[in-house]
Length: 199
Length: 106
Image (cartoon, rainbow over all chains, first blue to last red):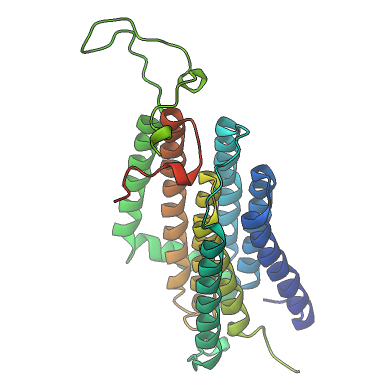
């Protein structure tokens, strides 16, 4: 990385603050739409962190896949399921919050302790390939990671077909077993909740 | 403090914090979409970790970056299938409240 070390520190501080505060906003904000847009900001800042680590290709992939695809998908899902609903209160919510928060804080202290106490065997920065990383990734993908690369394409195809099959609405106009015509109204609009009143 | 570059530990601490925030959101969200967002946050934390190690420990054969690309691929597939499952759940149960998806509870 050719920019000065002070600039790198400033960039790192700003980006990591945006990541942490944005992530807190994603999980804490009341409105799910604000959460989705903040999630986009977190993804962009993570891409900035990748740029600081000399990985321009992965940063571009992060912006394309996460901000361009996953985040848009999440916003569309919010649009499709965005119904104002008041969640039923849970009676032991307080103890649940306390237990989960203490678990997360314990895990965080453990992880930070490992990060700080372990002696990392850093490699020589002189060997760094720096800006050549895109070339090296291409070499990896077409030599020793060729099989995972091809398997990933099959995985994406399967995920695409699976998503279509799961999200598709049935368009049969006759019930298979009874032969009666099927109600083609939106099921979301029918007022009877199917299994929700179990308890 | 006179350093030549950002220490590796700084990246690791950021990714640890992001991962723990993701776990907290996963455990505490009522809205199913927010659960999926928390999973994406955790995957991003893992990616930051992989990228930092690839840049500081394996900076010649950057295998961590290749792994990150595969993780991004799997995360995209997971998001697509997860949101499709969420849509069909919403179609059947008319809610996105995680507490009402209790058919598998014993």
